[in-house]
Image 1: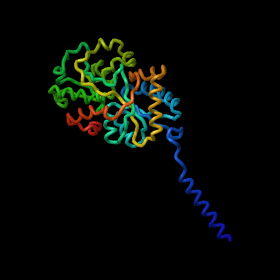
Image 2: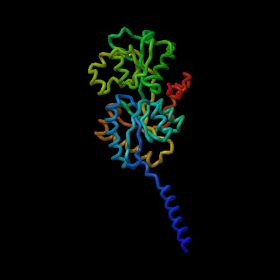
Image 3: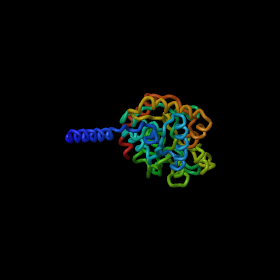
Image 4: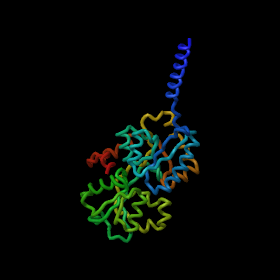
Length: 301
């Protein structure tokens, strides 16, 4: 009898241990397991953190989910985070999205609108007092790109140079990756570099205009790239459809509010969003393919 009771107690203990081991994981979007939203470091991190914190708060109110902003040091970390399912949602540049989709099956859900458009151009800028007036004048000069995966701040400007007959790898005296469009502008303005590549709205951003009130007069655009699809809101593979829909609806709702409009305008210069699909970003794939670019290798540079 005692032996039977002992076996019964042991069985209960064994079952208890099993149940403890099978404890359900907290639902995604809960305080214990927030949705992680990645933002690329396109501007100064301190300002970006302030903006993304305010934006995620509004998104939390719309969705009922807990959302945690994530700002790494470069574009590649967001892409890899999506692939490892450590980042659930992200705002990515066109090139970073193409890489995230083709490598990790991330999906675009919204494209940003700026000044009524869903595309933009890269620009090559110099100081207004510079003796550089054309692409040819850049030979042997120092030049700042944004990031290896930046469409407007790297790939399209390089494509422009190649199309005009210049070899970007030997044409410049020195090249650097500044890490953000605002940093390219600072590098040009303080003379660290002779010229740099930015997107066509970077000089209009309030944060950079606070530093350089006369920036439009103090700089010149010497060349522009072909049109580039604008940034996109992206979700990782295997994110539950109901969460995807709520996130999509929340971005559209937030952009339609006065408070949301102010937050999106600075530092991103975003007016709103439109639904998007992967084929919208085929021009980026075509540009990379035509120039023999391996986007994954470029991210590793």
